[in-house]
Length: 83
Length: 203
Image 1 (cartoon, rainbow over the protein chains, first blue to last red):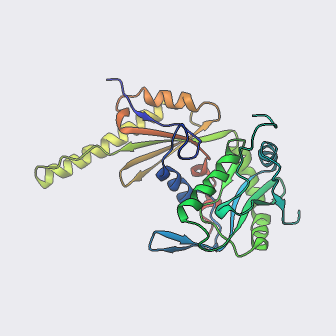
Image 2: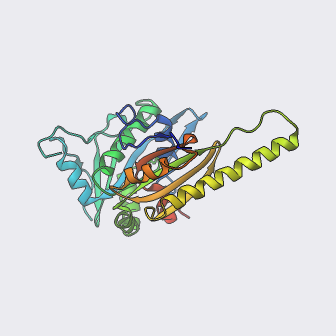
Image 3: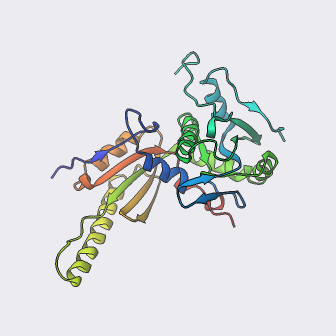
């Protein structure tokens, strides 16, 4: 019998036209990605997270430049010296 | 989108903090300075996702798990200096790819009957899940460069590494399979499930 599955395809944030649920986002953001040993993570009763310091994303410089060129004039500020 | 289009990139990060970056070799590491209890955890998660997604839509991205926090920018630079080569390899390897996911739900177990019948029902459900996962994998065998799957509390989650631009083809093939009514496809996601374990499970 032909299927009629619920198919969701989106890279959009929740609420977008092709919606991915908040649970989907939580699952990805909290359960996958690079882990830095010794980073600070404090959870309280599994409800709220309290954290200090920096939240980080890695991308290629090429991708970053494309991203910035597609944004407005609020260019991110370079805060750390190039090594 | 052209250069004259309105901004599509959230140039603020978690807690509305300004997005900053640090470079090492060919890697740009994006971060924001956070303060405790500035906003709700949910809002922070969505802000983080928004930043990752903005970059992902334009190219390769290797996301950190949220929340990943470090004491200061110097600690981040130290980590980056030690790991930039590995991250660069992953950006190059995974850049042309996206992660598509199939969520296979457990068939409902028979609620009545003996304990033996219940166990048999559960065993049948597990076989059904495995069969459906195998069918799905076969259906996209030439599309998926890599495939992983993991049991979850409510079923089975399958992850496929698929070339950018072929997401709809992936969805169509899975949708054409019988039994799709209890499956769900999401994506494209950054291919975080396929990152080198050295980055996701540091020793």
